[in-house]
Length: 475
Image (cartoon, helix red, strand yellow):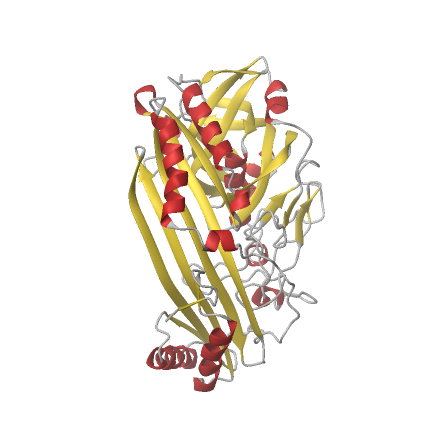
């Protein structure tokens, strides 16, 4: 199915010409009034390790074709990874059959016309050419360093490349290849209840500073030995970028998309245009940042736009796809459509960035007399959409701050915090941003944050169903 690039030893890609031929065949097979076909072909390779030893090396080559067929305002969607003539015919017939049997969608905007697509560089030959042996050398270096001082390293190093294309019956055709690389691991010392986390992601190998990740994880694991419990309560906190990305992504899931705002279930409702968060908080979606994960267009083939979501604490706008833009006067898509699958919940930002500040992590720690230093959060879940209330736990390193210094490690804590309130009182923003993978698939650029107050609860305050029982006000 896939063929070699002309340069021997390069990645397996269908190439723009062959992709276009496949999608043109889909257009010819369809009887619908409007037809859209989106094709992703990918190769993903992964080296997994545990307790200082590689135990798995796998590679997967796959393709996914998604077809949308519309008869008037009735729309059907079907997908396949069979790119044979029979497979193309079957998926088109399925999409058309579904469209004929679903109700009319009064907000169906029709398919987009051809657009000028920005030129975005997102393909790194060094990532695409990376071999299992090369990944093993990186992993082996991490494992040897951990083993040498009695620690365990476990995680995964993945590299891959993909090509994505969209064609529709209005004449639109867009195509873009990209690479992706991710290194995630934990260094731990189980007898001491110590662990530390490391992650970096992006599209170039230059975005993965292996030495720095290894050194920081080992240093944190050594410093995290024999954590002590503390009382539940509200404390000032310093949040590493790993913790910040979980909170900002929760805010995105809870209302940075237009559908949530239109359905009045977003934390942005009633707050757009007025100061809601600290003036130190600016959040935007930037698909063109070369230090992030650049993208030229969304899954409808619509060009990406730079979208200011929060500017100096003032919510300005959610992101839009064509469906949500059609529900409002004088709105256009910002290029943030998501695949129309069972989990579809409208447009979402995939490339969140926070404006950095002027402080180092050390500066932020020194600003706190008594508080907590948090590496990251785990199992963040929404409890109160209005103020973006979340619950979850800390993980892989918590320290008590005393007199502006890290005094001793602390056992993991459960959080119950409304993020709108927490981000109203920001005492500092880190000057360095990290490019990190989000839990829901995005890649985001975030700094560390110091907050005046963050709420930690006793696990005994939970109900039997696992939800946290608390009262929440609107402001």
